[in-house]
Length: 230
Ligand code: CTP
Ligand code: MG
Figure 1 (spheres, rainbow, N blue to C red):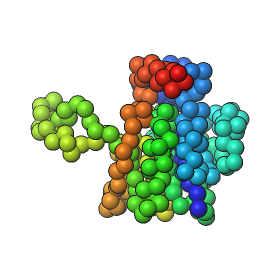
Figure 2 (figure 1 turned 180 degrees about the horizontal axis):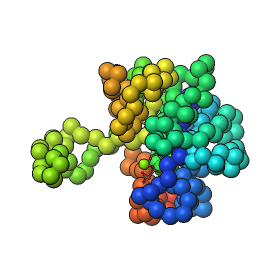
Figure 3 (figure 1 turned 120 degrees about the vertical axis):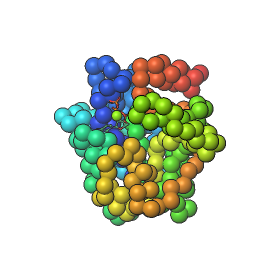
Figure 4 (figure 1 turned 45 degrees about the vertical axis):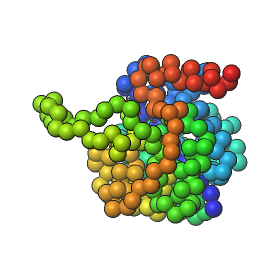
């Protein structure tokens, strides 16, 4: 049995700005998407046999050529993403083989620098029987709930809050069931499993798995890459 990785990379990166879609923006001379794929490949215990990558429509052929050298020993399929992240994940999930896969990872291209040990922890937890697994880190800000007029409703106990990262790992049939249901408003895949009443397990994430979202995140990414190559 082996693992399949779905990489939603079809977003436009509006908060990042710039000419190209976010997954094609470069850090250290390589695109965020290449960094993300290389990171997944580096998680050797995960035993990745299959990559399915959702990209902006029209860029499928270019991405296939770009990524082939990084996916040796695994199958690689590229699909056009949809208008929402869940649409992109679902389009990719449709191409994940049903046989021989015991874990499906869903990993944002924008979390391009996740360390291999985080990926391995997620896969190990799925293989130990957790049907849905997310990497998390503590939140450092105080989080408040506010109403529509900007008034504070309450302040949840920070010790009970975590920030959620990717890759998220799933038992394959659960992920298919989750995406067959109502996906409206879902900001991650674990949320869809929660809607089915499934308990989602957390494992330790990493600050390095931050999501490149705004321009300053590119600076952080450049710094992180330089540190790793020092
Ligand atoms: N994504 C996707 N399809 C979409 C929207 C997002 O595949 N329709 C992917 C992005 O490419 C990214 C991940 O989902 O790898 C997380 O999304 P986000 O960080 O929000 O990226 P964008 O949607 O591209 O950025 P923005 O929201 O700023 O436009
Ligand atoms: Mg987005």
